[in-house]
Length: 177
Image (cartoon, rainbow, N blue to C red; front, side, top):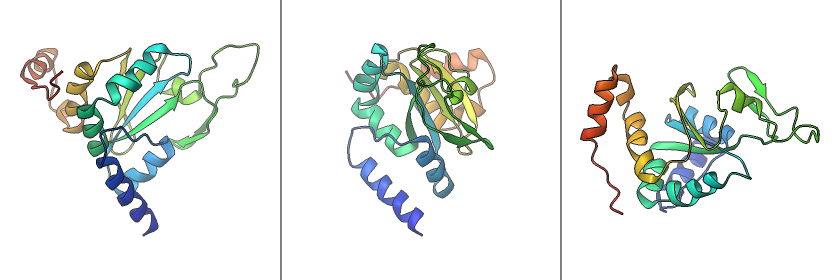
């Protein structure tokens, strides 16, 4: 009951503002068990300039932030961080974190998700299974069709490149700037 109340409060607070409300991966996975939603993971690094631009201009664009807050559990994940993550029946960590002989050691989850550059966005389904990854900095207008595409399970219907191109042509952006 307490988990349900915590998730309910989280949902109320996330929809009250146009600023994106980030969660940890552990929080998102726990929330999925109570109220299933897809997870969007933003893999970033502290030194990454394009990551900071995406944080400010893409994720906090009012239409993007509102849609993500209502339809996803958004997770910000330091691709080089030292957090321990329990997922897929194992524990992911960064054993090389703080090793002065190596610079920018990648977290094991970053490697597991096949993220080899930041910024990268990974979409997970309602059971936390990977759907796909987008690499590189994206504007709000570039990210928008993808967040609708996956939230509405369109990816399960489209089988060819032509169908994807038709989806993109028909997509009507809600971003007006």
